[in-house]
Structures are given as C-alpha cells and as structure tokens.
Length: 196
Length: 109
Image 1 (spheres, rainbow over the protein chains, first blue to last red):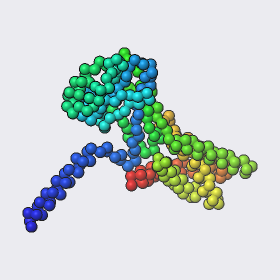
Image 2: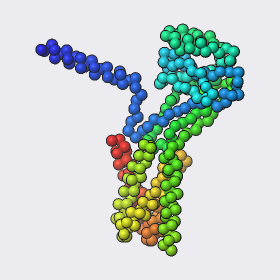
Image 3: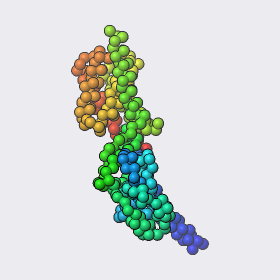
Image 4: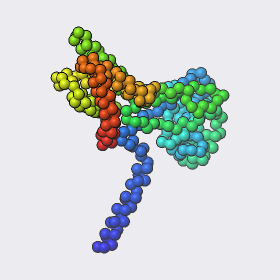
C-alpha cells in the first residue's frame, strides 16, 4: 500500500514536471493589459526584377534553421511567409535559370538539416534582405494598431536589414475615436445655439 | 470588435469619476449634469487617446484637456470662470490618477 502511494506520488511529480515543457512549445500568452499584433513583411518591387525568383529561407546561426523553417517561394503579392516561431529568415534572389523547384522541395523534405543546408548553399543566389524575425509585436491593449506591414524595396546590390516603409494598420476603433468627438462637438454647438 | 472594450471601460471610468466631481460642485438638474458631463467627455476623451503616444507628451495633452473642458463647463453650465477652472482641474486630476489605477486593476482581472 505504502509503495503504491509512493508510485502514484512519483507519477504525479513526473506529470507535473512535464507540464512546463509542453507549455514551452506554445506562444507565451500576453500579460493582462497587453496584446499581440501581427507583423507582415512584404517585398514591394519584385516586378523590377523579372529574371529573378525570390525565396525566403532560414539563415545560419540564430534560429532553428532548416529543422523548423523551410524555404518558401515568394509569390506575386510579395508577402514573405514567416516560418515557425523564432525563424530568422533572409530573402534571396535566385536567377530564374538557376531556380529548381525540385531542389527546393528536396531541401524542405530533407531530414538531415546539414545536408539541406549544403544543397541550399550550392544554389547560386544573392541575399537581399537579412534577418527577418518578428512575426508579432506585444503592445498595450489600448494601442490603436491592429497590424504592422513592413515593406522592403529591393536593390540587388545591397542587403537590406531594415524595412524601407513601415505602415501600421488601424482598425475600427481608430475611426470611431475620430467620429465620437465630432458628434459630441456638434451636439454641444447645437445646445449652445438653441439656448441663445 | 473586442479591441474597443478597453476603450469603453476607460471612457466609462473617466465619465463616472468626473461626474462625481461635477455633482459635488454644480447645483443643477441631475439630467443636465449627466448629459453635459457625457458630451464633454465624449469630446475630449477620444482625442486624448488618439494623440497620446503619437505626437504630444502626456502632460501637454492633459493641460489642453483641462483648458478645453473648463471652457465647455463654463459655457454649458453658465458658471463663474474660477469655478469652471476648479471643476475641470479637479475632475481631470482625479480621473487621471484614480482612473488609471482602477483601469489597470480592472484590465488585469
């Protein structure tokens, strides 16, 4: 009986010790009074380089690299698809003549991540945007921004590390906050005029 | 739509706290006091939230709010200037200090 109690206690302890590890894989929920707003990264002038294909891929060093982040071809919208959390991505320009979709698929399906990196390194390419990491920003709950759009204007002779344009999107509340004082002021003016 | 809830909460808090001050200092019909206090807050409060953190620092905004509100209090309630200054100053001081404490307590629940 005593052994059974010890075994159950040990089991409970084991389960409890695993709980934080399970939680570690989830995004940290915002603390009260804060919220997360999404960040979207775009390439603005892809049409200036019709001979190139643009891909986002994890960079060596920080982040989980090819184990969790994949190579993604950037479509005509210019949106850079962010990978799993903590992915440090760069944007690479690959000449259409050097681009091989099968090779990209091979890299993404390769379970040996060093080999995946080797295959990727063998592709002739230019790094044009370096180190995109943020997918969201934690702000106070009264922040009027609903999302942030970063725009990169590419120049193939340079590596951009900062967006050229940052456009915060504002939601319904922002416009409501302009409308309410206008209506209130109209009401106040009407009251004052009527009283005279 | 949920993004508006913290604003409504903060606005309601500001309105209630300032309304208490209005009731203490102004002798008039209660409906009139509620309506005018509401209109004054609906005019100044959203503008504070639009400008705060963008291009003006807090104490300048608060000073402007006190100035605008004292003019509106004077015109709407037809009271003496010194009384309007007093009401506007105390109402904003209370709602700023007490309001922020209560607001952050409520938002953390």
